[in-house]
Image (cartoon, rainbow, N blue to C red):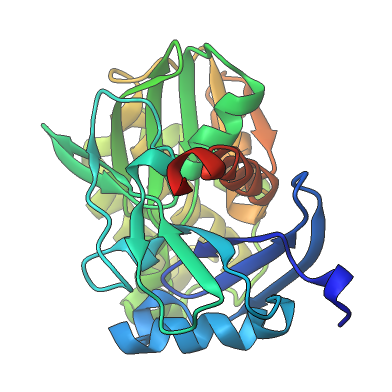
Length: 306
């Protein structure tokens, strides 16, 4: 690449299983987007910098420090360098709250954004706070509920741009474990899902969440003696788990104003589940919003680096 094509700065979203980077110019316009499977979960502390350089070395101008703004699990206790949490209620972290990493490569100026913690009930987030920041950049003063679906889904109460409280649900991980490691794996189709069955299961679980354990085994029984198809079984499993989650958040969050930050099938499943229960949720692209949050953080770089 020519010198003119080098990045002015680099945005990084470092998850547990994946690493995503964007090379941007000084105005925040995306030049290049790359990713790898070198997430935090598979790296020792001394392996983070080499993993990053694999994706960005050719984007770095010689003899110039390039700002690298990082969100996500690289700032965890098991990550590259621990970035201490902010505590609710709080505004999303900014670059002023970031931890500076002393990289071996002199071309790197790495800043890791912190996550957010909650003392009662105890909870934490890393990475999602940058999505929240990116959302609030376009929606200043927002008051309502944000839902960030994923392996560990976050529900976040925001008032006037401040994160008041949040809860994390392991619904995605429970689905993965039950569908692949439990007795239910014999009943489910590999991928296809019956959406009508899914929505009915959402309604059933939301009405009677205390019966979730028995309802889950009922999937296996229905497959054995009542002709439940693999597609319907998969729909029931997903619907029961999401329905029980929605029952748990009804009292603690305003479900009259919900914004979903996501773009994959699980986010669409949440939107469908909420609709089945009579709630309208707006779905926004989480990857774009994450980058917006990193761009917002970079906007104060000249201030904190001087």
